[in-house]
Image 1 (cartoon, rainbow, N blue to C red):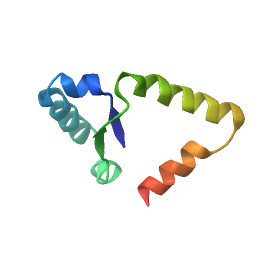
Image 2 (cartoon, one colour):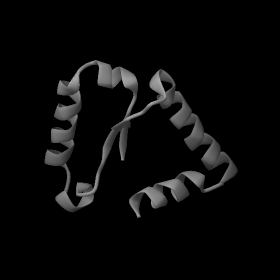
Image 3 (spheres, rainbow, N blue to C red):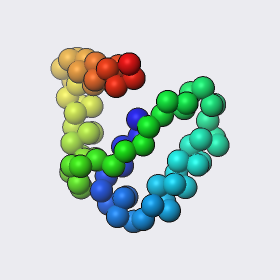
Image 4 (cartoon, one colour):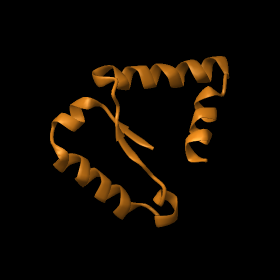
Length: 74
């Protein structure tokens, strides 16, 4: 899943669609067949919160990020 913050969404659908097309064009089809794109409802805080979550997950070895990622992918 690729999650954009609200600033990217506000810049217009053009950029989001271009990013989708480039990702689809530059990657192996099977690797991105189920790839989803979303805009975070968290607004501008999404990026820093996501980064902090990854850091804390790695530091405490909780596995929560991997757990939620696996749930999302089925």
